[in-house]
Length: 174
Image 1 (cartoon, rainbow, N blue to C red):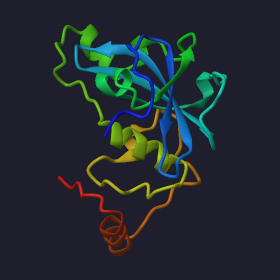
Image 2 (cartoon, rainbow, N blue to C red):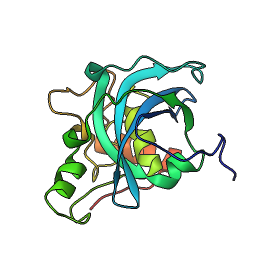
Image 3 (cartoon, helix red, strand yellow):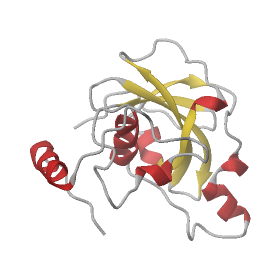
Image 4 (cartoon, rainbow, N blue to C red):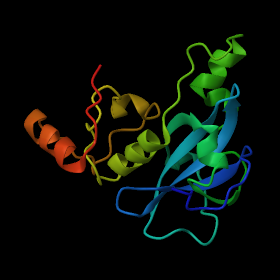
């Protein structure tokens, strides 16, 4: 399946519309490279019913998570590039960048798949269960001082299993 959006090389400051489970969009900003394979991102609380036609206003107080994803997600047109803006999160605030600054060569750095980032933002907005992936505790992916959103839906074990089966999502337990 071809990527739905125009391909472009990512750069720090580029802002992307991230597709969510209900076809709305969340917002991410590229911050810095994580070695050669990934890019640190700031994920925002913003949500748009349609693809934004203009670059949304970005504010540090709206950042809910700092995660990394694979470069091909940004370069390959899987998320719509909306434009460029000054960085809202400094690279030195990113856990991966802190590890790299200590002389690491990516050891200990973490990144998430395209789908996991999209599901995190979808869960943040209450579109899918917050506890969909027990091995990827979304509470631990929130920035320090950011509380679990009121929209988050927590399912009991039986309901979660039914949801995973109905949505054909794999159960990621470790």
